[in-house]
Length: 261
Picture 1 (cartoon, rainbow, N blue to C red):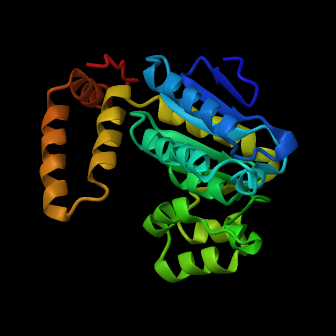
Picture 2 (cartoon, one colour):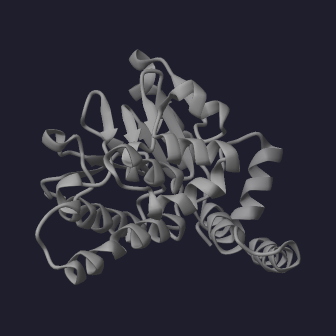
């Protein structure tokens, strides 16, 4: 893909690297960048050759600075601004329904709306030097849209502290809150991200899709309803050739050959 604000590349292992590439704005989540990001993710969703998506940044110190502050104070009519607000909900829903795991490669600061973007991913890897936070309140805004994701991932009091004080936290502190899977020394970051992506790509794409779809459809259900859905998904998994192949490969001590059926 040749979009100017988002790069898209797929390697031989089936890892799609979706890279935010607007360093002049520190990858501010403008309407234009979000539109390109949505298109890139749709491409990955419908590409059978893609097994995992890695969402990263070309900027050395910033993953994304969050929403475009210039757009908050521009002269467009309010109804036009409102119409454009659906991009974040569409993006977060698409990440959940992608059918493929998404790794956020936080190679720099993850701020404001980008914090929500990271939380919408399945795994988050962070450089040791990266910081996370919701500084919007410091400029008279509030993280309205991403508060739903923050409250689903961070304990209530700490979530309130992040949103109401606007302080940034270190990658290690973010890991302590359970929103980062691994903190990686800066010099080892790219290699570790690729290693994780390739390890995920080795799994059965079909079973991974069934699993991710199950997570997406049950995360907000009550226990009884969730168990009914998960029982049906498990029964569906039993009908797949990949489940049998995985068990056979384990017993025979060989690498599985996934049939995607």
